[in-house]
Length: 231
Image (cartoon, rainbow, N blue to C red; front, side, top):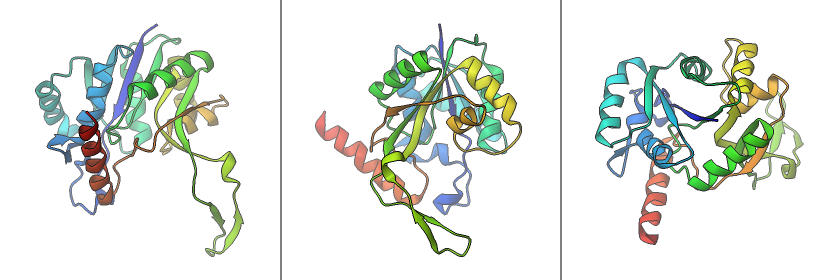
């Protein structure tokens, strides 16, 4: 059994209040954002092959950074689609996987992927066919109606925030994406759920942030600095 990784990194910087669409190349501590995830995957003995999905115009730049940082397991750099769904589908279509192989999907904008999260999610997917890393919610969640009045308060003990990595048997995730068609879904486990499969939840980390808005950059830099101080 082989373990393939797909790293969607074709996101834009719109929520960064930026006119550019090159968020994966945003630097944290002098290093492009998506390189952090690739280094974690490349250094893991659990991963056999990595596919990177970026905007077509940035493919050459991505290749240069991958070579610069000595990342060896990247087998292909693919153009992203108009949506994350299309980008992941491009990755699934390109890899030469068997139905019982595993596919790890991890956001290029999540720089703090730990080996523990990676191994635990792979183990869970081996057993159940589908696994998602996530954290319990700590805030009270209000459901609103169409006029922005509170409709109800959700039971947070049954809710959690989905993160990546998300890991699936290739046969499961491939069929789920074929069934869902060309619609925009921001979470791969949601695609699998819609196809009728059950997804196992694996403990994530508060450090496993996704860099989405400008404030996240400062948070990521603080996390990185705290890690250096502990080393």
